[in-house]
Image (cartoon, rainbow, N blue to C red; front, side, top):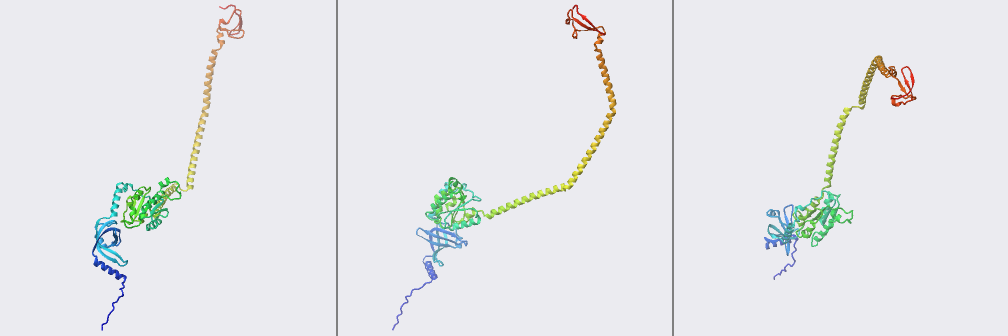
Length: 440
């Protein structure tokens, strides 16, 4: 008699790890090694040197990892949007259950569509002079206000605000929210920039109805975190670039990571490798200003102390020369006493000389008076002699007569007489009354 055994119909139960390894083995047996062509997206290089990115085309994408050993053999720097051909091995990343391609070599296969579009627009705008270095403006050393354009939910906003709060908590920050990814992002970015332009000095001048309490924006940060070329594509919008050209204040572009480049980086006044770096560029640390003030304060104090020391030395020298005030007064008293003594001696000498002169005058006075009297007597005698010579009587003694009319008027001419006139003739010893009988 034969015994029939029923086959076990119970399905096999896999563990997750075993299933992943089985799939990996199947992939390895069926496909590896494999060569794939696709466009790089989301490329990043870890500090360990390993590279992580995705390869995609119009119908799908696959995650890739390229370890440091293979990455060191690259003869170019992979960038998002580039079309490449890679050779590697398909596998499963068991910790996440993800299908991934471990890239062992990579080479350029031509430019990706987005990257090619990026280069064409960049060349056209550059030919217009929008990226010229001569357009670049220096950042304000101490802005009165900082404008930030980014998404309210972005990690970049948190990073920027954290840096600004730490370094310049005294400077107001105005956040103009906007989408930073997607088809509607360029329009919102442009609108937010236009709103911030109204808060700049020139914007406030053109809109005097703005609230006086609104902060003045002297610099604008345009920031976003990293991502693939598609994620950052809004920052390659032509109209956004032209809006940035019209900014009345300097603009800092901090979009993506250090290896990411967008057209806003080229048109802005300064490009920062990350949003955090953008915030640091416009925010000189308050401690640095305080240290500068402390240094200036120290220098001023040193200068003042030097001046005080110099003047103190001069005062000490003057005090040494001056001595005690009582000593100076004693010196002045001695000088005054000496001057008084000299004055007294001078006065005595002058009085003595005066007395001597007076004695001499007294001794000479009689002789002087005598000579003067004699001189005056001689002058009187001469005058008397001259006067006597003029005496009419002397003339009358020589036989002359003095004729006068009845009233005593002197007659000196015959024309003063007339016949019958009575006249008087005065002689030396008397008078004679006469009558004019004839005139000849």
